[in-house]
Image (cartoon, rainbow, N blue to C red; front, side):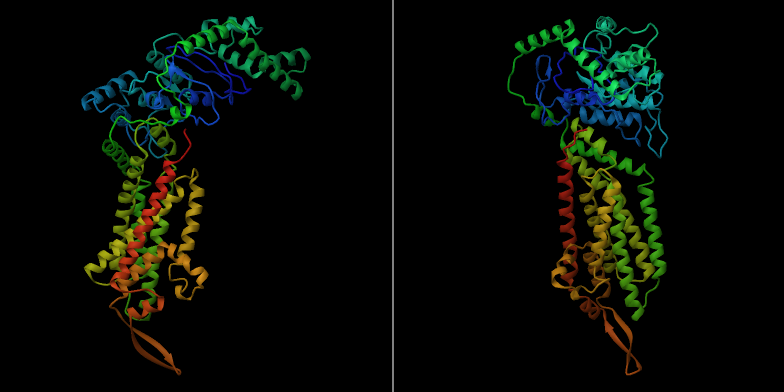
Length: 576
């Protein structure tokens, strides 16, 4: 039993085989204590030892044990069977055949009582799924798939009704042969006698668990104090605080001097004296070593497959992105429809190309939640040894680029290019599509780099939007770049729209002839100008190498942003 004073300091005990429970009020440090036992807590500032069968925890203990977190972390777009199959594919050793893994999944579905919903989707905010109890059992099954020797569960009954909570606990009891549950560090059968002996008697019809929490919180003495004073619970705040503090101090002192504590210390001393240390094992090593049961390619196959399925089964991300791109392509095509080779044609071409590049940039803001929305799922699966960080990163990037960037960019290019009436040339069209796609890739990589270590999507969107606004100013349309003062001109080299717009302008304007009307001495005069002259005025190198130079700049920027995003994701220090 824990108290509110120094919840995770000077804790000693023995967890015997079977079902063990940690009971305490909110904020008493139950989850922190559980994370320490499971080697999932940052070891900085911690001292002491956690022994497994009398020896120190192995460095990869968190990959060998199971851990069911308080918040369900499971892919909602997949079925129960697909989630369990994913866990089996990555957590069971490669020596286990595919047929044996499938048999393990089917066996676990039967043991968990999930046969009726085995092929039903777990469910998301947009997809109706299974019940809360079935979802919790699916989470437990994800850990039981490898038959761990130790299984940790953080508040497994939170949010469940009494019947569902009972079924979950019965499942855990069946999965852990051994003594019954314990509510303090000692046999549960002696708990009431222990508290009675130290002056706390549980009424015949009171729930023992509620009674223990009342004693720990000081509510037992507070109600007694209120009754004795005849104030019907209207006791002074200072009296309540002093009452609770004295209760906590007495509970700690009584347990430390009890026979239960003495027996526990004696057994611990026997274990420590008899343990055999093969090599020193620090807390830091035990908490930070992650091992894997499968190869890089095997992990990439399964994670990429799951990520693609998740995108395709999420209409709000996949279908909506394509639909919005098609709609915007029709809008820009209708506005700039059939541009001409006159003065208005120059302006319309410039406006259309500027809109296309900026649209690709701002459309990539949707990638901000790519790593944020699945942060808990990623951290849990990575720490548990499902896959490497590089596997997860590549899977997310490849699936997002193909489904949400390449396909929408191609559709946008096909519709808008011919509606606007740009150069009728196969080469020019494919260069246009390549440029639009490359701008989308680079903008998306910058979005990933900014949002990779963020935890709030709104804050990430703010940083991304501000960055794109500054880039848009230096794109080459809103301000003439050659006229910018030298101490500000260097900012143009960090503008994604500038490189994309310059490449599109070279691709479109080179070789065109325009009929321009000028006014000289109150007389209108028609003259011809070339697209090259327009590019000279904008300060754009319009050679063939100039266009590919812009493509190269976009590629280099994309690579840099992706490296930054990966490093941010790789060195996240948060454990759970």
